[in-house]
Image 1 (tube, one colour):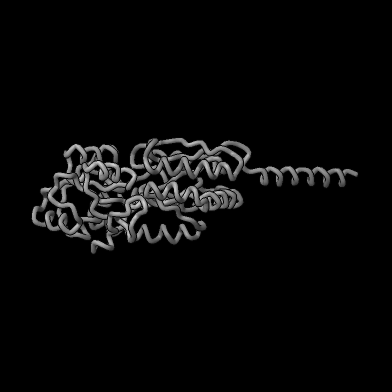
Image 2: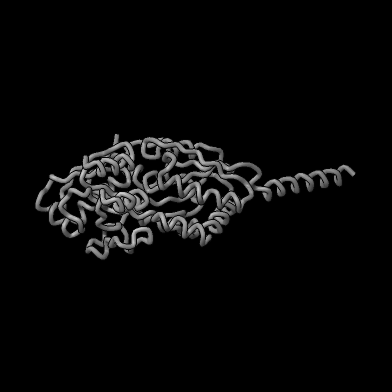
Length: 320
């Protein structure tokens, strides 16, 4: 009888364990975003997070942790319990650029468990209305004739817009002075206020000022035009096909998160990203949704690391 009781107890225990796993998620999930509210990263996180929550039957609560180029948020996410109740919206900065430019990092970008790619927002290159160049060719000609005269506002040293500037300098062969600000919106506002000459950011940030006549859009840093800015030529069309940069995002979980939990998160993510309504809504803001498995992310990230390692080295970008 004791043997049967032990078997019965073990069966019940296994059943409870299996049931607990099958019940994931049982509570609210925290989604850590490395930038403040209102930016394109935050907007995408909220909309995709809402869709995933609907699929999973739980709420994904956004936790904005801005600062230090995403280092603060990444550290919090990396040290969270690997139980599926904390996910992180990593970016090109947190996963690729920071490890290249910082001598020491408080997190290991390679230690996260990828859930899947989320989106990319190709940047739009623009100049203030007073710059005597309203096309990409005219801009390059003017910049080459006036080396060091034009300046460029960015969201800070080693930010995506700063990297876009360095890429532009390399591909177009121009000399432009970098002026770092605390945020992308500050840099764009400085261009609108004629304090800086050139800016590069997501179309949702740039195009309203283009519509008002305060900025001239020169090119989309992408191989194709954006639905949100159909009149703006792609970098390929203006003869600088190598000028491609976007503020891309991917979801991650802390290292050690169970494979079945990662699979559940990826399935919810893929179902959310397949929504035509979400695609159209974000496309109107210049954001393209990505789909695919964690393996596809690994191929994508490998190419990104190679690309930006070369740019960071050639531009000699370093942070303490």
